[in-house]
Length: 324
Ligand code: NAP
Ligand code: F7E
Image: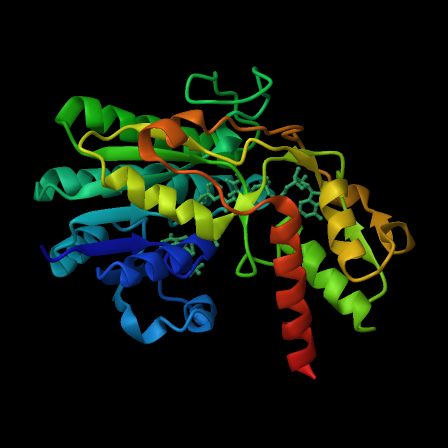
């Protein structure tokens, strides 16, 4: 059977790795891309797959463009990864965040309902929905309490996906993914900000690293491992919701230490705490329990935090060196 997938957010970190995974599996891959005034395809080029993806222009705020993309691609699977995904920005642009991260999901589901082609749907839900956590380790039954406009918008996306599954029998699944990183991570997120800074400090191009709350704890995994879980969810007979995490939690400080030690530097010699980088409300700790994904999908993470951080530092050293 010919399999084709439409990926929104294909120019982002996860979109690039997912496209690579699906191309390797023989899928025809369509990328739903927003028109931007500058180039956004560097990740696809880094993976060497830019010319293998078929691009369709559209925007999640424009339902007609989603409908057209679904028709043109004849996709059997739709992965909705597009989002305003930076938590800090969601306080500055809360309405945009809701338009894209909440209503954008509804628009995808409405297009699927209207076209009635049986396309399977993946929604990129997030551990940010747990926010002010109620359980020591969070799983699919943990109560949600989002702490940012991003988390609140994503919670709508989560529930509308559940609702359309229950109301209309759509094959629609939520992946509740904990933080996942890679050399393709955006520079605004803390891990990549740190690994880029470590590379620049090591190569004499920067002296300090300014951070906010380094006591926050996250359950960090490798994006390349996590996209496999997304695909597995859509291969199940029944759609469902799954936590995807490593089951380990570390502080931002721990993560920094690994990065600095990898190149023989001392974190304390370069770290500056900047109060402007603290958030109006913080998610202090995230610690996932991926037992259901393991039992039902046979998924488990392959990459631990130390290997992930070293991989990112090495990639950033190569990049900074190539800048000359
Ligand atoms: P990312 O690197 O920030 O990528 C976001 C993607 O969304 C980009 O391709 C961006 O396009 C696209 N996009 C933004 N607004 C759009 C719009 N209005 N219409 C169409 N496309 C739009 O994010 P990521 O880390 O790959 O994450 C993928 C998804 O998983 C997101 O939904 C995120 O919220 C969610 N998530 C991420 C994590 C994580 O730790 N990475 C954890 C849980 C959930 P441009 O490149 O053109 O801006
Ligand atoms: O922050 C702290 C910050 O921006 C992690 C997104 O992919 O994962 C991501 O959201 C922690 C926070 O990721 C800086 O306060 C300290 O406690 O890397 P981050 P995030 O907010 O956890 C979830 C699961 C998603 O769904 C999101 O889309 O690090 N922190 N100092 C800092 N964070 C940043 N960015 N920059 C700092 O200077």
